[in-house]
Image (spheres, rainbow, N blue to C red):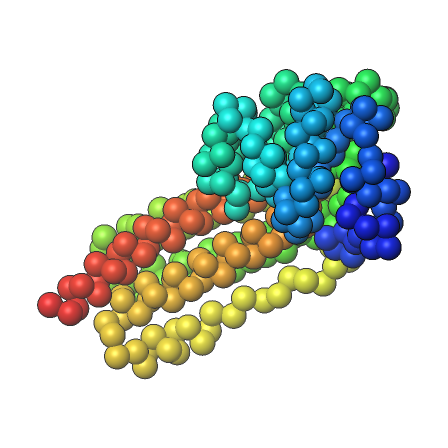
Length: 315
């Protein structure tokens, strides 16, 4: 049963693929009539948290030991209900600090279960999250799938309307192409640098990018999808203009190159985040997480070197 704030309102999914009308409004529902309460994520949670009836419904459900599950931004309603003190939870990265301020123990894992409270972080956790809810309610899963394998999760998600095999392969291929271009750019940057310390730092970053390219290639190969079936979203990353601008720069060559490197890294970090948020495959999104973390670390390292160079040039 879908409960909403008004019966005349239609609720759409994040990607506008499905829409649903509520079966009733929260204020008319009785917690006693439900086995579990599922709080959806996205902007819906922001609206639910200011709905007193919705907040009280969740409070009552927990007080009566009903299963309560929330994903993404859904735990915002739990924050409003003031029921998180001392509990282990997870949720969207954007509300991590909010959860901690509410007294929760934030755990960055795909699934966190604390008694009757089940939480997950994002779209990529959906198959694990959904399977956990079904299991707790003693409802059947797809018996033909072995839940211990990575492949089982994306297959479950696809069966339930999540990312298809081709969609996952397409996103992997996109990031793979972009990282290959990024590696080529960094190799060219390294050759242009005059400072040996900077050159050494760039070589370490190149090694890290190669590691991720290998992981992406291995994961992509597991799907065995022909490139002709992939969506055409592998935008070429053109760095030729970068080097033309370097020659015209009024700053030192190395300083301008560091600045451009920061731009390149930030572009790739944003792209990885955007594509990761579109997938329901836990394994692939975990690979994207690792890549993003290393790109962010590289960005911070380059930023420190860049700021140091600026200070030296201003002396």
